[in-house]
Image (cartoon, rainbow, N blue to C red):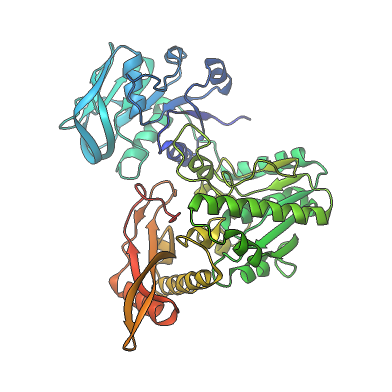
Length: 513
């Protein structure tokens, strides 16, 4: 039986995948498609409802993204968010103009109880605003259902046609009751029941992988991180000994991590996997010599990964498929949709244009990180692996600002080990979404043992997040930071300063490069 679906039309904003993730939190399947998806394709998709995303454009500007106005006549419930709100007003006869006062950040909004969208929402609630334009007047047959002190149309609706719009972003965690609003849309307006379950995803994925791969040989890019580990076990369940897992130790892993990965997935581990460890540290260091640009580093590491896999595949014999643990945020941050490119991702933007495999298989491509963890639990993977700290494919290569060298790798490995060890000792590791040490390219004067030093500064990064699309910097207790800083400076050769990164996402990304 086909799952009920919500369709998200992407108009170019940075929160578009987050909308899909919030809908899936409601146990309703959701996909993001370009704003110009044809009416015929929309009918074939057959959604229970449609959500228009935000975007950076003005609806009255030339070449702004505009969907087919016929979409409003299809009878599907529609929720417009930010740009999507303005677009709905613009296409249906309202007026959108440059706002006298822009709104950015947390804002108090006054809502009306008569709207189903705001059922059980407090009359004054905090939301996340991000707009310069606003709806000056609503279309005919629409009524205003919310406002702020400077925005007369913070929400509007035509309940008879099931058309709803909000100027703010309910999907962002800073919108205190935003999730409840999305639940109201999904359950009370679109009449979904919530039939998207990870147990079903696992069962269906195993069946589809068997049908796709048949008797083909498969090479899995196993890093030991959450995503690739779940992908490997999922493939193992589907095709057994047809799968070979290749673990490349590129010399950019965390301290002791390569040995830990082999202990779990190698011949003495709990899984019956064909496991190959490739020690390629010197090869990667040589490729990265003199390179400082983060995009070049990502692409070099990504391409070298593929070349190593190709070489291993040649040793094994003919291999048909390459498996990667790509997940949904990887795709959006690589700019493969209509949104702006933030950075090339190691699983997507870092791939070379020519590879010697019939096809790349990405069984987790449509999942968010929390969904991947749920799949891991369904597959029986131990909690210690399922809830492991996220780690990027380029590894420490993007946690070292500037040129990557063997000496710098050791510095950041040792500092990161101390950071993680002390966070665990303090009992706060489970409270943090992600935390790590990075090596800046700044050297400064210090004094140790009455002698002058001229060494590097380490930056500590810790964030609170559930979805990795947005994040708040974590407020680590000062006494814990004191111990961490003292240990790093005393124990890590080449470091004389420790900084704390207190920037949220946005405007920063979680990783440094």
